[in-house]
Image (cartoon, rainbow, N blue to C red; front, side, top):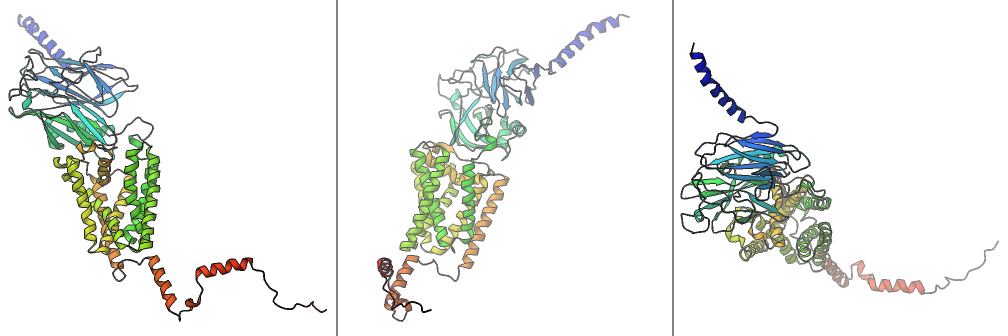
Length: 566
């Protein structure tokens, strides 16, 4: 009889505690519950503030980082419901770091949508212990006291990331170690930073794809497994890294700070970019590629296809195309560096300058018949492609080539070697240049409609020639399915074009003779060969003079005229 009241006394508080624990893990419209080490999708209504909660934090967790990622809309994360500049951050990749008190078991912060529409993204919670370094723990540049975020900015040439230095780990509830008191192994100066890069699928701008891949690289282990390490920075190095911009291609950058003494690591908040704007009316991410660019490279692709298979046979057409490419490339660099004209104007002037260069090269060959000049120009174009292809490989990212005084002499040396080889086999070299350069022109034409990394073989060199600061940028680009397909297409075009032209030209003269020299030889032959009927034909000057005199000479009557007798 007395057991029931006793069971009731102990059972009611226990059930209430379980109910409170279960209720604390249930999300509601104004409240989101996160779990440690996991990610979850987040939806924020317009101008809505949502409370985020982590219940039941283990005692061995020293600090927690929270990441919120959206595709292109800005979201606000804040320590407090009332927003201040020192306690909140706004962006598409925003994060907070929460040092925990000694007895703290729950954590609360706030999410807000400042946009005019609802926001969809993903949130990631990562717990760390006292041996792990603290990302952004020695921040002195940005608003947050401890800032684990990576700050990204981009332009047409390069994408730059910056971050605050980290601090060494410390026990829960203790005071953080000082940042700049000493520089020994017992301070933050022993820390190292690994910068990683992860490319999203090519030609895919969907937000769901971004969320799926952000979740794959949010933690240290996932980024090390899936990403590509580009550089390792010491604590004495500047916390800034530059990359080549790839408009329209999604890429995620992450920084992992390592403590080599304790063999531990922690991740900054990864940041992503497409190097383009989703909301601009002109050239946004969905409409990359101007009409003028498509027209220009479509015509270039058609001309390249012709040169690839028929360039040596139609030598004057080949010379015009090669002269066009040679002068247009140099002219575009010149007018871009010395003028501030808009892109379409520069492209139009480049086309005119290239056409003039092509005509000039054809006239030089027509007048002087110098095969040497033609071989040099064509060889330099092929040498440029070969040298650009060499530095497109991981060789181009070697630290020694980040200095212009090393890069440009090496690059030009490779360019000059190819014409020297042409001197020994001029016809074979010319046909090879037609196949390789013509095939690459086709690839560039395809690139104006569908993104491919192969365009950056020459574009990275062009960027370096236009921007003095581009030498510090990493030029790594993704090489995915479409790139393998187009590489195969380029190889097939080049090989088939070279083989076909070599077979067709095997019994013909190495190079066609100059029309002007042929005309001079024919004229001399006619002067000395009296059996040639053309020998008795007056010169052009005499014929023209006679024709002019006839126009002003009065005609004499042919003879006596009599009236018709009826």
